[in-house]
Amino acid sequence: QKEVEQNSGPLSVPEGAIASLNCTYSDRGSQSFFWYRQYSGKSPELIMFIYSNGDKEDGRFTAQLNKASQYVSLLIRDSQPSDSATYLCAVIRGTSYGKLTFGQGTILTVHP
Amino acid sequence: GAGVSQSPSNKVTEKGKDVELRCDPISGHTALYWYRQSLGQGLEFLIYFQGNSAPDKSGLPSDRFSAERTGGSVSTLTIQRTQQEDSAVYLCAGGASYYGYTFGSGTRLTVV
Image (cartoon, rainbow over all chains, first blue to last red; front, side, top):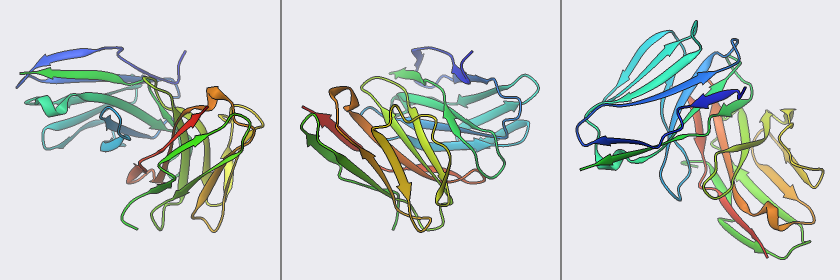
């Protein structure tokens, strides 16, 4: 079992729709969770992080965490073509430090 | 500096040569990570530093790879006797779990 798994994609949604990206992790001791966006040819960019169960909203983005189910998701509302990218889920065990483990990423395409 | 700085941005080297890749994180970044990304692939963990020590170097592919960090700041990744399979983008990230990790722009290594 991979340490961090993401829905394989690619995911294609129409402009204005909600894109839902999912991630599961195997280490029940994981404490901190991150979502990165990576455009082709660029390095990953941090867009959200979450530590507590529940939802965290930032603009059009909502991260959802369920530690009991070992599941973290990212919702993108009112998707735009500029949201087309690879989305990476990352997990870290420690509260202050530890190995930062990434999933393989999900390619999202938002079509006009 | 304003962000995580990596140098060189591009490096072409002959097979068998040694290369050094440099990462200069933002002041105060306690943790520093090195990843490798081949074309179209996910992020491959190499090593991480907490201060100057490396609690996890399990991702280094072989003993040709080594890394060090001095003064809790600059880190150098050294690849000895480069091989063609070492060709990839090498990414460095710094930060802390309570505010996330910022990536540099990467070093694109090509071994010919």
